[in-house]
Length: 134
Image 1 (cartoon, rainbow, N blue to C red):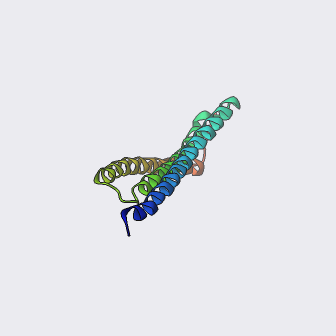
Image 2: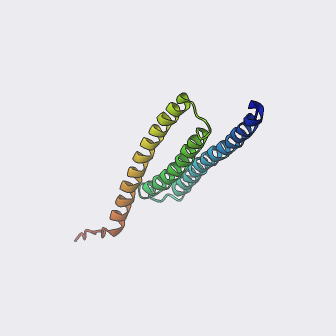
Image 3: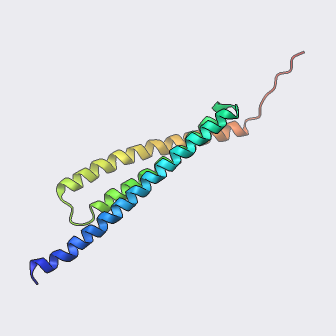
């Protein structure tokens, strides 16, 4: 086999993976964008109804955080896929840095989501005490 016949499948594979990476990253960006639009719309409608923003604010943040975590997972998947075909040491280093940053972001977002969920559940299970004035 000559070098040019071996090069064609690898180039084709790189092109296919490039297309897949762009699709996956676009999906992640769309998820984050949809979450931001949804959270903004929910925040605006809650404010217009003059309901208590404090009570709804944590629920909106919790939902937005879920969108962010999912979107970041898609972005990380795209980065991993990008380095799947004959990565250089530079690409591996960049992937490691990106993966570390996104993993830390995911960790803190997930932890904050769990804390918010616990606070919401605690608020829902705590009976409201009313004071009676004579």
